[in-house]
Length: 392
Image (cartoon, rainbow, N blue to C red; front, side, top):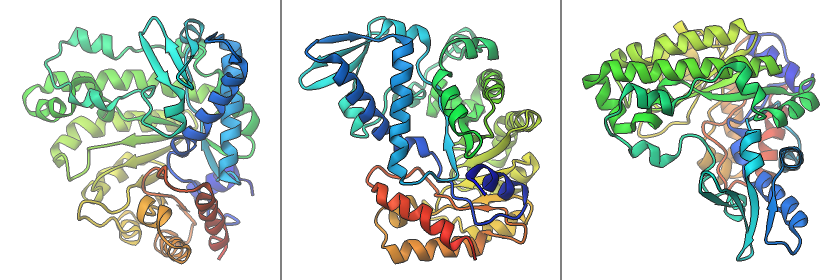
């Protein structure tokens, strides 16, 4: 079986030749390798010039080649990879590469931004990602009109025509017959905190309910269009990421009011479009499991144990039953990065014993993104061991 067949079989409860392996957020780990390749490509083109204008066609080819080069860090591909949006054609056409102080900078004159490619290649925090950490501290009063401006709802066709999916199309065409392809989308509740701020989101669920509902609904409309765009491109599933909705953050009533309804609409539409809905919920999910079963995702992923609560794979399996596919939640730091080889093997074995059921609905995974300090060789060990031990 290839990776795509293996993943689909595990999610649907059909026999597999071995347990599929799918570390969460593969693109986050590969990002620094991709940026290094991107930097090297433009350094070669720049030569002795101080600036090099970007053109959409050339930039998309460089991004595509850089992504393919980054895949080599795995040694061998896991059973899934992620596809992402890249800069729009308009942004590319107005941007340039600037050389200064032995570094290259990605410059957008209209936005007034200048991003160090050397820092990105080192694995520094990526300022180009949507949802910057500083946005969490906004916490100010906002009007409905300001929310509309901050959360544009673009149609599927406008999104596809923007040029932001051109590289993804190439990756899909190259790999769709052999690897399970997924995109990452945040749930509407998760995105809301980047609009009004973290504190204001939590307080607003008590004092500004109408406004918070509007933020969530606005994000739902925008995310549904993104979902339609990804489905049109022929990927296999969506990794719906959700943060700060566990029992360690909000009450069951708040989850029922501000989280559950939008998620239900998203997951159902995702499945209606023929995609697998994978729900990655962070925090203490134990009290949420009955509601998660009502959401009926195709698979559930969750963090490793944190903050003095235990998320044991066997206990989660016992609570959700045999019909829901589970991703493993191996500790990304204590086991993956710094654990011994024997500890990694033992944990993979323990996870498989606790998470697998008769219908094989289990995928070997990691509770959090692979840490930057984890060597590519270690990641390959995880992939290899999962496949080896998953044949038993």
